[in-house]
Amino acid sequence: MSTYSLKVTNKSGAQQNIAVYQQYPDLVTGLPLVWFTKPVPDGNDTTFTWSINWALNWGTTSQPLAPNVQWTSGGPLQNMDPTTTGGNNSMGITYTGSEFSTSPLAYPNPQVALGDMLVTTDKTFTVKQASLMSIAVYMNSLPAFAVQGEPNGKFLFQTHPTYWLCTTSAKQSVAISEEFVSSPTQFVFDPGVTSLSYTLNAELEFVPS
Image (cartoon, rainbow, N blue to C red; front, side, top):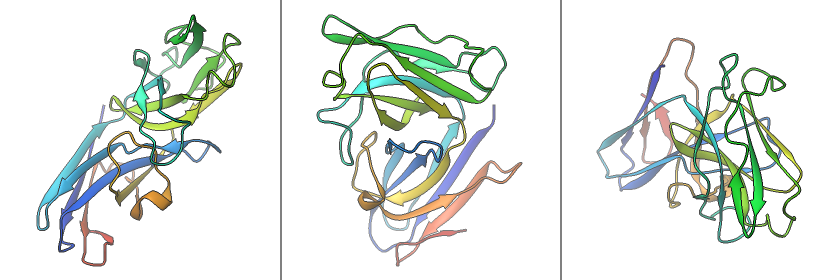
């Protein structure tokens, strides 16, 4: 499994909170979560590193999922292997008593296309009961993107995210939108490339370096 790294040097003239988030172009709803974030003093650099391993989970928020809302894990993390034939690629969410739970746990679903992951919810809860529940896709054991939960539904995640670099005051796992970040800059690893570096300049632009 390849390890990827992103080095960022802060030459903006002041300390900046530098963050990485992911977008999932196939999802028409949902919000990226602050995936990585670090405060970086002026003149210093930091390096984000990760491996592409997948997981799914449901979680809760203090209010319906929206920008600036903190996402918190609820169930046990379900590790997925969606790019391997016969690997785990699905899980379910149900409601028992007054709590959500993961059922069934992660399992291989032959009806799900290679590279996709599926979350299925049942009819044991209502829209109102699901108002504070959302579903997140994880990479490197950290939540990266969340969608609002609802009953009797199917939530399909494709393993083709885009990566973005930004500055933000939001903490890790907080839901964001472009209005809640500054200088969003997409970065791409070309085939065979596993490390990139950027410099944040005085105009708060991330420039390849």
